Amino acid sequence: MTIIIIGAGLSGSLLGLRLAQRGFEVKVFERRPDMRKKNISAGRSINLALSDRGIQALKMVGLEEELLKIAVPMHGRMIHPLGEKSFYAAYSGRQGEFINSISRGELNKVLLDKAEAFDNLSITFDCNCLEVNLKSATARFENLGDHSHFEVKGDIILGTDGANSAMRQSMMTDRNQLFNYSQEYLTHGYKELNISPEMSGSLVKNALHIWPRGEFMMIALPNPQGDFTATIFMGHSGKVAFDKIRNTDELNGFFQQYFPDVLPLIPDLADQYFENPLGTLLTIRCSPWQAYGKTLMMGDAAHAIVPFYGQGMNCAFEDVHVFDQMLEKHGTDTTLLFEEFQSLRIPNANAIADLAIDNFYEMRDHTANPVFQRKRRLETMLEQQFEDYYSKYSLVTFRADIPYVEARDRGRRQDELLMDICEKTEDIGSLNLKELREKLYLI
Ligand SMILES: Cc1cc2nc3c(=O)[nH]c(=O)nc-3n(C[C@H](O)[C@H](O)[C@H](O)COP(=O)(O)OP(=O)(O)OC[C@H]3O[C@@H](n4cnc5c(N)ncnc54)[C@H](O)[C@@H]3O)c2cc1C
Image 1: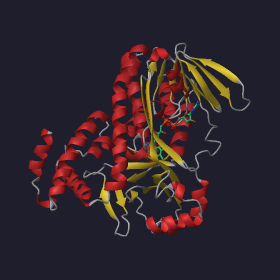
Image 2 (image 1 turned 135 degrees about the vertical axis):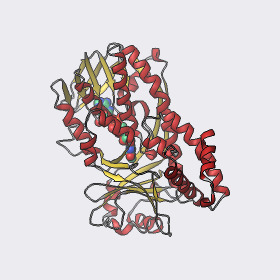
Image 3 (image 1 turned 90 degrees about the vertical axis):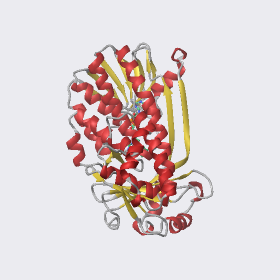
Image 4 (image 1 turned 180 degrees about the vertical axis):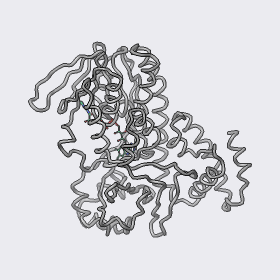
């Protein structure tokens, strides 16, 4: 069986590697140049939080250890409220539950190297997929070097070509698919800045830093070389927004007012700020993901989400893991395989999309709120005392065995009860945790 993969980003290269390991003939086509030869990632989601669902998929291809070695563990959030003392909140009350900051570029390069080491897999770069004939599993490409067009036919085509997927466009134009699609932009965009190793000494290394400011926020993730990648998430337009920062004076004024502690850490702030691109954020939901048992989308092509739960890549990697399980179950009966895959994955992708939007509000508005802080402390106490208690964050992040749908539904019910208690009770130390655990069992 010959399998065509469109897109050699994070999910496409992992998927290619797994299919090559299974002995399939795999041909991967990627629009961008080979990132191992050309630097192409400047200013856009430089590092990512890798957690258990993603790690599980890396384990499947035997790369868990190698890749965790180049990641920086983040054990909790370091919150920097404006004008107040910074404080730390662990991600979990249990030992060994943490997330990992990993370089997108390095991760992708390792996956490409490992995939390309197989004789039965090839990767062709600089090829832009223009459209896919869903029924005949034929894709049409433009060679971005000489602008010639060519077609490639496989037994099946897997589309991992990201949020602006060409395969999804082809799904949309095939009326037989009864294709449903929604695209929702967040009013907020993002801009990345680098805090160099020489300047980052005051930032705790093994934490994800958050500067919550209500309508907007900044976060920073550590890199192995000691630098941090900071990201400002803010409205594209509005009272305090990207469109109000037009020159160095406005930029310095903005930082002096809202991020005075970060200002001295980025001496070349204006150069970076005005050079780096302003990114947009959106949620894409669609169905079906497969057509005719011949073509299937996964990763961001099928379900782009906003980055506030740090789950986009983890969910895309989980897709690959579940696809592999379906392959084990159905073999090359791709009609059955694709059907079961999408019926398992679509509800879960929608659930993490919901949670990611929830977390946007939680991070920018609530992390500095005393009731929310009490609730986090209470969750930590529960996790320390009861082996089987998992907060919503822990269900999503550390329980790869629990589907996102269950994590969302159970997590939200728990949140409601705990927030209610923390609103009424300031002294959470006086609570009877055993009784509370019993209550949590019943909801
Ligand atoms: C600011 C930000 C922060 C994020 N942080 C996190 C995080 O902390 N943790 C996390 O898990 N996720 C995070 N994500 C999400 C994560 O980046 C994505 O979910 C992940 O990259 C999806 O992988 P993918 O392979 O599906 O798509 P992509 O990584 O986008 O790869 C798609 C590939 O397809 C190629 N391609 C596109 N169109 C074509 C075409 N027409 N022809 C051929 N090739 C094509 C592209 O060049 C690319 O290489 C973040 C995203 C953003 C924007």
